[in-house]
Image 1 (tube, one colour):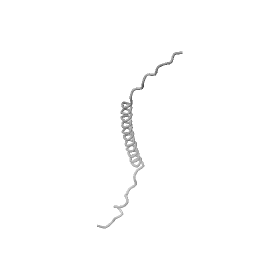
Image 2 (tube, helix red, strand yellow):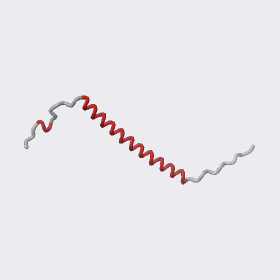
Image 3 (cartoon, one colour):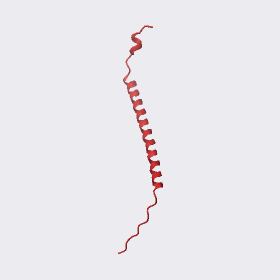
Image 4 (tube, one colour):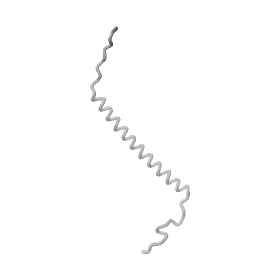
Length: 67
């Protein structure tokens, strides 16, 4: 099998609209992945905070000093 120019180079140029659509799609994918990771981290931290608050004893009521 011989190497030809057609195998290594695209014979036609990619249109600007196609290139923009590919870039837009890649950007939306990255943003969605970051949002999912942020939501997952938020849920984990919320669960840890709730567990920590549940483990702490209730504060004792303070008495007010009378003048």
